[in-house]
Length: 337
Ligand code: NAD
Ligand code: LMR
Image (cartoon, rainbow, N blue to C red; front, side, top):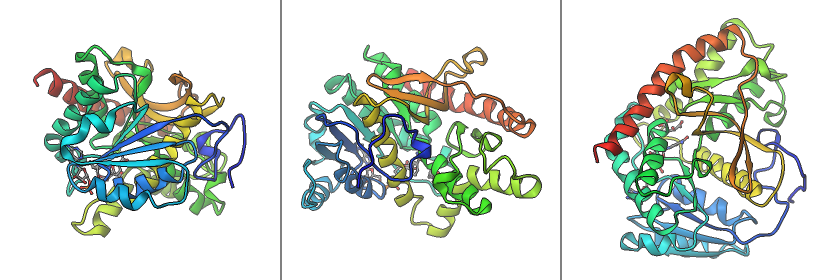
């Protein structure tokens, strides 16, 4: 079931999980009782690279843990109630955060509620598990990642190689939608998606893809729009009941597996993720998603964007000012806290 490969990128991988080595890894999910948290916990229980799973939520985590713990894979599972956050983080190497509210309108509407949830969780991580790798799913990712980074920095334990915004759902959608147009399997149509995770800040580099580069004109415009606003499709279809949960759980498990493979020493694990990045620092943009090689220390290497088409240059022009505002908003929130 699990393929072995020394050098395989996440985007070219068709299976959800693969593994090359055995190593003990304790993973925590903060927000494990939610729409994303529950299926994500189940998928992580199925990942052979996870040996211990620590499930925390202000509501319902012990129940989710009892349920998931019956799945017949080797990992141990523990659930922690609202007042047990520190216990949940004890000895954890990877923390995945899907805690917070999903949107009804724009992702930025979530800022007021989710900013403090994420800041408080990051504070606890800084205190109890300061060397953990932190994977942020809670929206708005463009702001919550700077919030985590600034909170850990305030605590004196920030390591930029260990804080990631999970943008994998954009990558998953881009492959799926492009493959549908090109008439191939999504595994054959990996697309690098750069920038951030909301609307115009999501920039798919279709010109760099064998199956994406031939897509032009109106079909191209519609495809880019669908990748940038795929979240809206789900919000609309759920009609007031939340945003993407199942595809996000899949994407979150996929990114976690990629990180665990990197931490285990597998070489060549490369995927887009929103990290502190030198690429646009000269324009005052400290965080950016581009292809990142994941390794034993987390971020191993941040890849440059490569050649962009004229259309992609225009998309970047729209992306950068919005991304900068989102990042500054996150930073300012922690400074004023
Ligand atoms: P949900 O409301 O179903 O679940 C959120 C969970 O967080 C709930 O169980 C809630 O009890 C828990 N929670 C709230 N405060 C908490 C705290 N202080 N500590 C621990 N747990 C806490 O929401 P959802 O649909 O699972 O979405 C969660 C977040 O993920 C939202 O912000 C959403 O916008 C975001 N999201 C991100 C992406 C992405 O691509 N990065 C994709 C989809 C959704
Ligand atoms: C998504 O892209 O589906 C998520 O960010 C959830 C949302 O708010 O759209």
